[in-house]
Amino acid sequence: MDIAPGKQRGSWLSHVLSALMTLVVLVVLAAAVALAVIPRMLDGAALTVLTGSMVPTYNPGDVVVVRGVHDAEREVEIGDVVSFQPLPNDPTLITHRVVAKSFTSEGTQFVTRGDANSADDDPEIPAQIKGKVVYSIPLVGHVSLWLGQRRTLAVTGGAIALLGYAAVMIFRRDPAKAPAAPDGTADEAPVDAMPGAQR
Image (tube, rainbow, N blue to C red):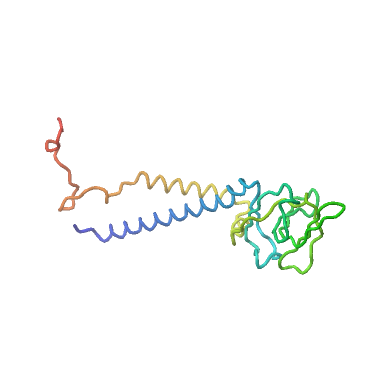
């Protein structure tokens, strides 16, 4: 059976587009799980690295996912990378590595330092440590920073595009699924020739 070149190209292009859209959907789902679902399960957050203080471990634009810390004295050890609140009542967080842990008459204190820094941070008390880094995703933070106030619009547009693609895939008629006779026409038996057929 001969197939017109135009139909071959259309079918090939359709398969490529379908594969690409499937890949995009899988990437978006994986990102959503890694950046939203897992941090919520860990009572933590996904934080974008803004400075180079942790290079080469984390670069600006990377995203670090932290789990919530409720008892820093027991949960945090030397070598851990933590996100801490340097000033009371200030939501700003800094993510550095713990380089010392000491027990004083005033309680436990932690000393942190960025991997790229030569000086230690001021000592922190357990209440200042809010999270402990679990994993990081390179470069994703650049997208988040670029979207900024356009994030809602981008998410909405992406959802509409995916729904539109799903609708096209569901309702389109695939001619390759229809059996064809040797002359290229659809092979349909007369009603009278079908077993059990009635007029």
